[in-house]
Image (cartoon, rainbow, N blue to C red; front, side, top):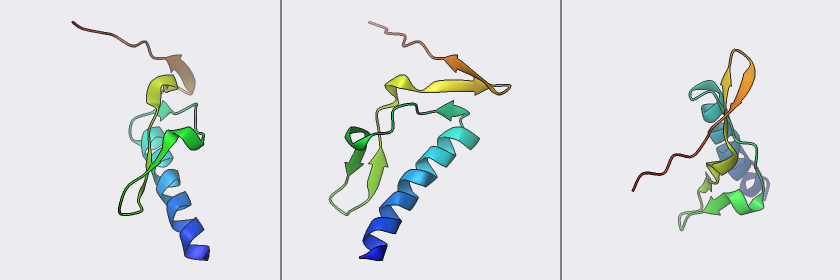
Length: 68
């Protein structure tokens, strides 16, 4: 039971850590609707629509650019 809770929580924590440390992004919308569970039981973090860039410890709002 403990592993069933810790492993998925660790997967989401790894995703947030990657976003912050490698991509300098803040997710800003972590909620149950932003977590998908694959057929193999892996948890994936989605919903980056509210993500913001961190530059010099300041959060910069990202704007979506659509190309047609």
